[in-house]
Amino acid sequence: MENDKIIISDLLVRGLIGFQPWELEKRQNILINLVLYTDVRKPGESDEVADALNYKTITKTIIGYIEEGDRHYNLVESLATEIARICIEGGAERAVVRVEKPGALRFARSVGVEIERSRADFDREK
Image (cartoon, rainbow, N blue to C red; front, side, top):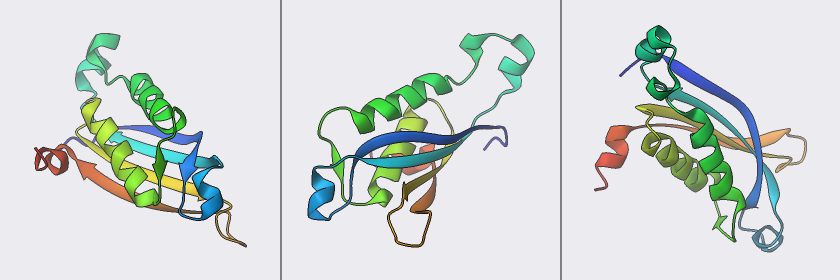
């Protein structure tokens, strides 16, 4: 695995998440933080966009995935896994994904989960 990382902080989207009856219909803020592991030596030397991991495409895919349609997740764990899959399919070798629901618990700023997945985790499913 490569140690180079692309860090995306505080991507805020609105989606349907949770299992309470009101959460099935009302979109909530979802805060996403990503660490995408990829080798940046080639784009670092060439300064060519074509050689780099396209993190803009990855984040746009994540935003569309969560915000479009009526897709719903009961658990942040499930959503984090799907976000990790999008990152890996987008070209990252490994991804650390943190998904938080701000204000989900009284007296807490947010509640969330952080997972780490690699290409091998999703290759096993095929």
